[in-house]
Image 1 (cartoon, rainbow over the protein chains, first blue to last red):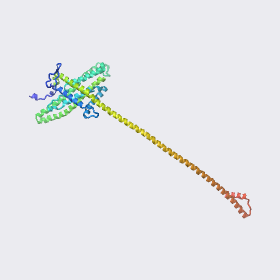
Image 2 (image 1 turned 135 degrees about the vertical axis):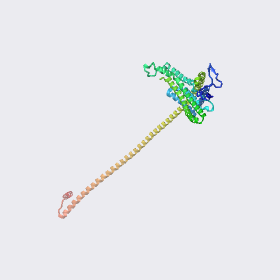
Image 3 (image 1 turned 30 degrees about the vertical axis):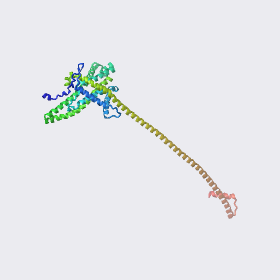
Image 4 (image 1 turned 120 degrees about the horizontal axis):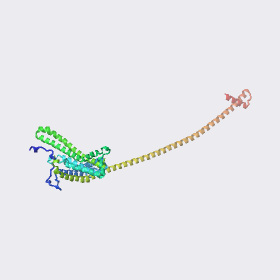
Length: 261
Length: 164
């Protein structure tokens, strides 16, 4: 009984197959439609509705169209600033990446627990962020080798490297290059998970202290609740920042592939 | 930590559904909708810049017209000024000419009058002398009974007149 009443702050990350899809398989690989997949679906639908709403193509934009155009202009400007004219070609990918992560983060923060639905933030799973990071990394590799061929390896020898360091610098550069997908994936996954755990822990403080009476509720519960409000706002910020960082780093890496050093 | 604890059983479904939905996002939204949105923005920017260019051209044209009008106006004013000055100068020259003519006439009449005056004075003078000589002859004859010749009398008169 005691163990059941205890709130497990990690439980929110549990993946559960929905509606008997547990047995779905392709070539022996399980592809159950889980709560994670459901929130990917919701994210995709909301994002599609959002962008489609801005597709009215009016000369004088309404508010919705203005919002969507602000986002595309933001991504376009970021790629233009980091990659240059060639960056235009990557707007569809980086826009999809940014908006997908942003909407996933924000939707995962919705306080739907109040009505009994459990929001699931799939960006707090490194399998998901890992796939996105690998996608970005593969694009960098493909573009780099297609545009520069084997010359792409000169990325590991920055200009001005002293001759006597030629045995060391490429090794360091190679390691820092290979570590990129991991840092991309882990940054987003850790940031999202940490925020959600913190909110969960604080909410368990509020509930537990509230259950044990007015005194503890006032001393522990109320400050925790106020802190939750602040951290909730901070998490909204983090959602945007992490999506931005992911897109920004992707565009920086694309710049390496497009323009070398 | 479910992310690790469930890794073996869920990784394939996670990857599969992520690729499905992110792929949809990329191809339908990123490839399909975003270029249209950006084309709209571009069309609007082009429209705005062309409108601005047209406005600028119209403004330049207006400036040019105004400049031309100003030049024409200045030329007209200068012409008018020149006509005016010429008329003034003509009038002044004509006046001067007439003044000079009148002056010449007046001068001529003045000199003529002066010569006339001088001539009449001369005659008057000589008449006075003659009269004086005759008077002197007469006076001498009556007083002294001496008949004085006319030239002598005239000479005496002249002397006294010069000395007198």
